Length: 252
Image 1 (cartoon, helix red, strand yellow):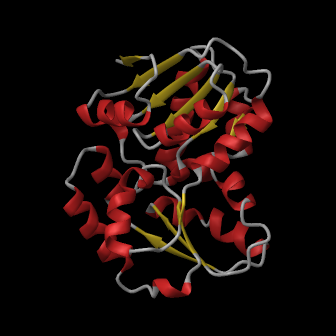
Image 2 (image 1 turned 45 degrees about the horizontal axis):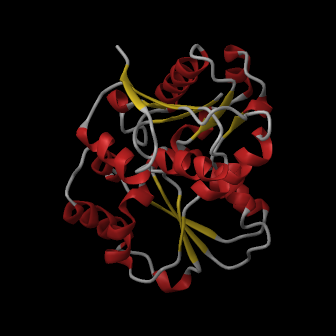
């Protein structure tokens, strides 16, 4: 069974893309809404939450793990795999599949992400190894605003304030390096216009199929776990997975 975790609703974008490619895979999803958002937490907090999230999935039978949260990527150290008894080849994170899509790309890139993702410098280092020019823009509070249903107008204000000092014409693409951000794509377009956007969910889903198929063939069962139930999470599930059969369970 494939286990996917995120701080809340953002990882549903990755879940949707995986189900489109692997409809018969059994999937267990955990959204840690009680501790959301992750993007402004310390590295120590993120490590603790990452271990907890993976254990939630493991004890319920997931053996192939997908981290659908960019903010925790820096927490996925070798020591963590030892603690969890998890083989590295059984975990897929966001950074590697995303960067691989741009390996022959030499034009300037702008990457929008949470403060935690940008402070980790994982994306910056990976792109520099490719010889690609990359700038980053942190958008504090946006993931939480999306998660908890802050109005689109307020989301647009956060995006506009963060991007105000950037000359967007110099960039060939803007990578949405937080899985919550595609849920606010309309707000991004309203503020930034016709900038080309890149959603990493598709690249991650391609890597999941490449790495976990065909061993993860099942009955297409979908089970959703949350640490806190919210109407916003349910609305995102309905929008992204309109034809899916699923149950939502709230963990104590």
